[in-house]
Image (cartoon, rainbow, N blue to C red):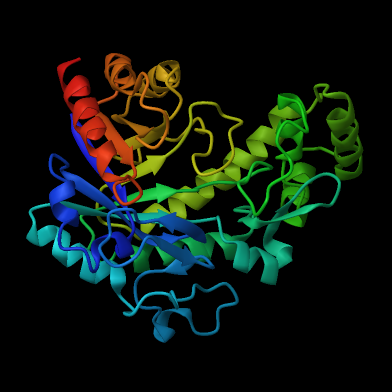
Length: 358
């Protein structure tokens, strides 16, 4: 059973006890390029919170690579070194751990706000500034370069948001929960940017008709007659993005993905061609009833890491770990070593043992 724990560089740096709390893990997935976040650090000896106010690259942002590009990352102003990932990785390896570069690709509120022309837009014209649309060649080139720069010296790469984000997003004082049906959320997650509209036209669809039909479908929670073409458009862009990113990487890659082909977000829906080009899938399995999701992903024929959280109610978590292993998961990816308080550590150990015995 492959065991991976997720962490941020600030969890490791300044805390000599961190590696000891990763006992039992083979790999730490260490954030190398990550979106904005307000993160708890309950076990760190020097702070309790870190506010990362924008998406950042935790490796040096080299002018020789990024100069002249419109889409380019920033170094984190809240870290004291331009290569906090590299320094943290060295400390983890000194403790005998493998280090994966955890890279978030298309989730970047700063870039989506500054360059709205490459952000996802819905059928009403509402832009999602946190989401970069992979239909744009410029976005794919940015993501491919970001992955290469983030992955330097990594033992493997963990790719998150390697596809399109949609409507759902945990934002400041979010006031959208339960405002739409599941069907309406699906249509509000269809990107309608200029590049996606061009792709619709190439598939024989009239963009004006598509937009008006989608708007009506949102209002009525009804189906649309061209759903297959919309999904094919999204999947084609996802496949292009993944191919361009993988082309620059020479270490094993695990891909955050979901077996539901319509899924958007950090774990985008698997496309028909996803799987053979990556070493494993990381499948979201936070709810304790998500073993069927793991089983569906296993059917794709790739090793599957069940992405589990130790931050919710402990009721059923150990049984849940046993269930996802029985469903075919060959690994557990724990969220999150740095966020977890000390009284959660026994739960991590118990979940790992339960999965290994399943």
